[in-house]
Image: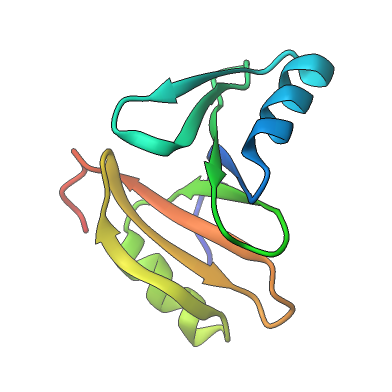
Amino acid sequence: MGPSRPAPVVHLELHTGAPAEAEALCADILGWRAARVEGGARYLALDLGGGLSGGIVGCDAAGSLWLPYVRVPSVRLATERARRRGARVLLGPGLGPRGWRSVVATAAGAELALWQPEADPTT
């Protein structure tokens, strides 16, 4: 049985080997303004509008991908449910700068970050 309410997407990150080009495209085409994050040499925060946060992650990946972060009540439980449904766990549950997260991938390779605010004690 699934959750009683749909889990909201709360953050959207673009992982790319060409962050400067992505920043320019986001600003010129979409009006999304980027700001360097203190201590995040390869991370730009994006204001996506509509209450949705985002970012551009500079990485060494061959391709680029959008990684949606979905807020769940418990990252640990959601990750285990995903594993039981056949998802690969690419990044196990762990505490980041603002909350708990994990990254899972479907058999077809679609990636999804599961996220839980740090202040939420139900890890």
